[in-house]
Length: 183
Image 1 (cartoon, rainbow, N blue to C red):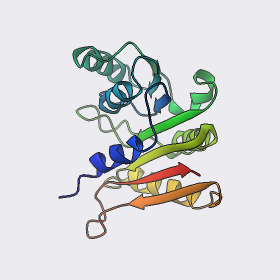
Image 2: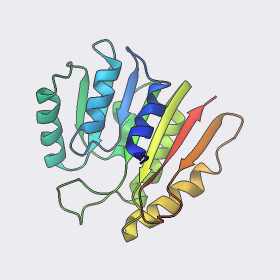
Image 3: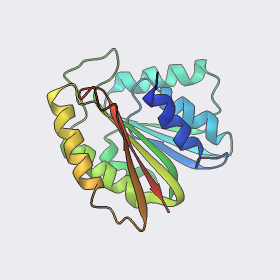
Image 4: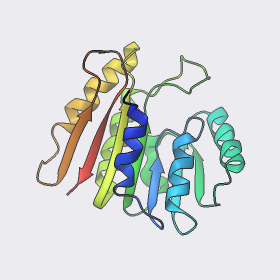
C-alpha cells in the first residue's frame, strides 16, 4: 500500500543534499526534523518550528536519541515568522499540518498562520528546491486549511514552480500532500 509520508520523503531526497539548509515548519515530535538533519549532515543546517513547548522538548529528546548531528535550531515560535530566523535560500521545507501526535488535539495549525508561512517558504526556495505540505482534512480546520493552501498554490507561476498534489482519491478524509518544486 502507498505510504504518503514515505513518498513525501522520497521526493525531498531528489533535491536535498549534504550541506544544504532545510526547514521543518511543523516539528511535532521531530521525525521530519530527524530526517532532514540526517540528510543535510554535519555541514548542513535544519531549522524547526513549533508553537508548543512540548513539541520542542519531545523533538530535542528524539534528535539526541537518534544520534543526529548538532546541525539544527529548534524554534519555539510560529512558522509564519520563519524569515525572522532563517536568512537566505532553503533547499527543502516540510509542513505536516494538523495537531501534535499524542498531544492536545484542540491545538492545530491554523489558516491564519499557515498561509503566510507557506507564502514565506515558497519565496525562500532556491533553484532546484522543494517544499512539501501535508494536509489532514479529517477535522474541520484541516479541511478548511487544505482548501486555502490548494487555492494559493494553484496561483503560482507554472514557469517557475511545479506543484503536484498526491492524494488517495477514494478516501476523501485521508491525508494528502502537495509538492512544490522550483524549476
